[in-house]
Image 1 (spheres, rainbow, N blue to C red):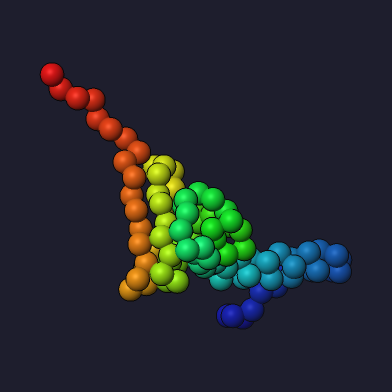
Image 2: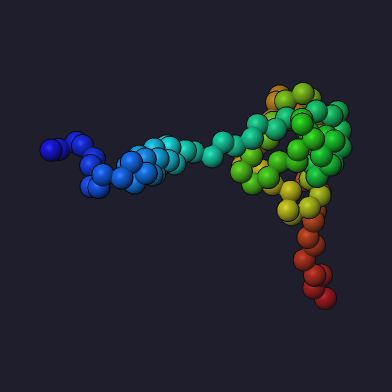
Length: 105
């Protein structure tokens, strides 16, 4: 009987548990984590300040960051990251050196 799933046993609890497990497995196979869409909401400020971002969330490595309001974001730490960055035509992103190699004599 191709295309059908059967659970042997007459116990309704076993059949219900198998049906629930199958349903959960199908849901998990189709689950894709959503990346947050986080927008710059200030005219100027530091990237890592939550108050400069929509919903007071600082973007992480899986989020999509948007600076499309003409704002200026200062990136000062190596840990400040995002999955994707979209800049509007008047946005400014200032990268401040977070690491300086040692000087040679």
